[in-house]
Amino acid sequence: MPAIGVEHRFRRSARPNRGGSAAETTDRSESLSGDRSNGTSGDTTVGILTDETEASGDAGGRTSPARAVGFAVLLTVASFLVTLAAGIAFLIPLFILEVNVESTPAFVGLTAVGQVGFLAFGYAVARYRGMSIPIAVPSLRQVGYAAAATVAALASAVGLSVVLAALDLVPGSVIEDAALTDPTLLLWLGFLSIVLVAPAEEFLFRGVVQGTLREAFGPVGAVAGASLLFGSLHLANYTGTPSAVVTGALLIAATGAVLGTVYELTDNLAVPIAAHALYNVVLFAISYLAV
Image 1 (cartoon, rainbow, N blue to C red):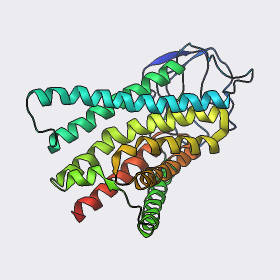
Image 2 (image 1 turned 90 degrees about the horizontal axis):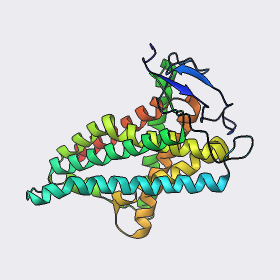
Image 3 (image 1 turned 30 degrees about the vertical axis):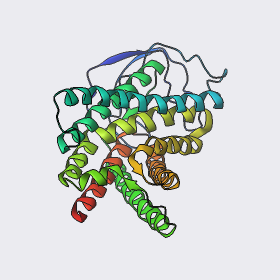
Image 4 (image 1 turned 180 degrees about the vertical axis):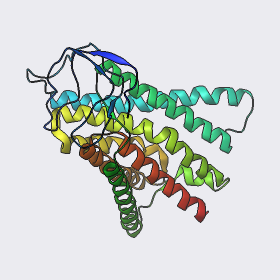
């Protein structure tokens, strides 16, 4: 893929190697494309590298575990608050104009505005930290990884749902409840999953949160931690008893683990984005046909 015609002066690359340590300090000007060892040509690093050097970590560039965990948790809480604030700002005019906020257009608009705020927040944090988040058109092999991750996530969701049903811990769903009034909501949410939800959530949780945790814990710990935080952000999506709501969030965390793993395997954020979008679209399509 041709290089994007934008260049940045790099002081360092904040994306560590697979062992978890930060990349070697450099001082060079690079374009936003390059070849990677996994076979993807024209890999594009999102233009979020800055001249700021990292203030935390030891002499070898490794972030302390406590600092990494604290920062990751703070990011999760802050992202929720940003989304909440964006949603409130969207709803206030609707209340003033006496628009039905429970209508499908309002629900879709609220979701879109929240995800835009979510993506903007993730980008701002990544830019502030000088993080390098690789994203490129996937190779044919990586398309296979995305397809496999989608199947694995769906299988995980089905398997865990069966277990939860046997334990009488199936949570209610805010989205499914809203779709009972207008099933076309599910089609709109499927579309938003492709253009906004998957890119925004993957950028923050796989790119920024998992990238931060990787600096301290390596890939396995990063995937586990980011997945749990990813699940916790979705607690508000569920209704029912506290235990049922928590199990619903754990189901999302299991999906996050699949997405985090495929990101580590491919080093290309486009792969988990594609898998996440396809996973959501399949679930929304099934729900639409079932209503």
